[in-house]
Amino acid sequence: MNIKEYIKHHIVIMDGAMGTYFDSLNTGSEAVAEDCNLLAPEKIKSIHLEYLHSGANLIRTNTFALNREFALSKGYESEETQTAFLKDCVHAACMIAKEAVRDSAASAWIAADIGPISEHFFQHVDRNEKKEYQFLIDQFLNEGIEIFDFETFSDIEIIRWAARYIKENNPNAFVMASFALNRNGYTSKGFSAKRLFREAAQESAIDCYGCNCLIGASHMYNVLKNQPLSSDKYMMALPNSGYPQIIRGRTFYSDSAQYYTDKMLYIADLGFNILGGCCGTTPKHILTLSEAMKKRKPVLRKQTTDFDHPAVVSKSKNNPFLEKLEKGETVIAVELDPPFDQNEEKLLEGSYQLKQHKVDIITLADSPLGRSRADSFLLASRIHTMVDIPVMPHIACRDRNRISMHSTILGGHINGIRNMLIVTGDPVPTGERDTTKAVFDFNSIQFMNYVKEINRELLNDDVFAYGGAVNQNQANLDKVIERMQKKMDAGASYFLTQPIYSVSDIMRIKEMKARLNTKILCGIMPLISYRNALFMKNEMPGIFVPDEVISKYHPDMTREEAETVARSISLSVIRQLKDVADGYYFMTPFNRVSLICDIIEQMEVLS
Image (cartoon, rainbow, N blue to C red; front, side, top):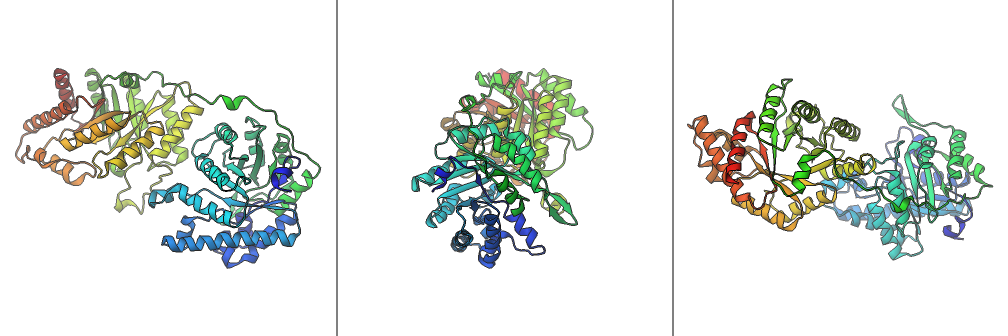
């Protein structure tokens, strides 16, 4: 009997953890479970047998972490050696599982265990994500595996594609999608269980979906009981055995198999078809669970209508900057530098001046160049409160982890912030990397998707609007536009460019506007001295200052003379951008707000 027939009338018991159980049995060993497919296959087979003898009738191959990133960590640097190594590992893992099922004399199925490939891997290597998963899937298909378990994923996009690819190659395959949810029902990327479950239920190539890892059985039940569950799909739940504790440098999980099983009974009552365990669970947990489930049948679930009505993201309220931009009116954003110390006086004075000159929004950088300044969100809240002008703090992915970034933007929302510029962030200066560690839990596109989900699930009556940075000077304009499109897909409403000084920059902006339906605020940064112009040309990456601009300055200029040239250059660029710019993004050099105000006044005369 295949699993599709069996699961209609029975609860399937899946195995428990491989990695944490392997570690508990091999204390002191530097090897991880996946190493032993080739190095010590008898150890992996022994664990499979323990689970099979404990009542599991569905076991997973020992392949959760097998991918090119794993191969690279083992010293296989070329694509050829990685491919050979991974093929050997997958083949060995499948053979070990098949031998265990044969030797146990159990009636059991084998699932290909595929875990997520780290996004950081794709940031640092030129690899195609889909091709990497396709490679793994092909290896399992070649081994005759017909059940695929995609586990511990934070979103559904790659699973959706993979499920369709599997079904194209084997229409009889059984595909499971399992998401890692925290106790609030969200993944690390901010996707809610409700959204993921809805999309999995609507994907015909996915046969079964549910969740595993991160939380224990009690919290998993609390999450699942509040979700709409499809009657057209099978459901799976594989919680951890409680939460890890570190004792004398070793990680321990609760070994209370009975408590775990008691909570799993509640999950079974929700109508779940496949039950098993993740981190910390052992054959003891699976034995207790299988005994409790022997006489139970799957509970029939009623079809919900909630899947037909996904959350609709509304417009941001009380956002005059965005309203003006969307009407097609020219907007003006001015960037002020957060101070290095506690003195806010110049910042507030400048904000008052700019408000009087009808600036639409004040934007504040988030410690650019990796040099610590006052917090952009806290200062933005201060300006918004004291000056009553819209604000756009930048938020860089460099310094904050997921928890901090989530709490930062929610705190900003409570304080009236509705716009932000999301940037990946400059790297930490080389000389400080021993003492200052970059975080980069996200890049800018990943965090935009995260905020998009927060808007959908938490703020759908008054959402954030957010923009992205764009460097029009990068060599490959097609790549620049491709990345802009990805940011637009992730919800970016507008873009702020690097400072513009040349005709080639202007032509590139025109090309972007011709190929993308988006709003672009063109960067204007007055150069206030000969020294400043040389510095920007030679020491600021991503900014192009042509020689003809440098030639307009000389070392002996007075401040007034240099500012006259700066105004002239800025106004010339603005005139040339008039028919293409949706707005202007002024970067204020050395707090010279009066210079920016002068340029804005003369802009109004030009218009």
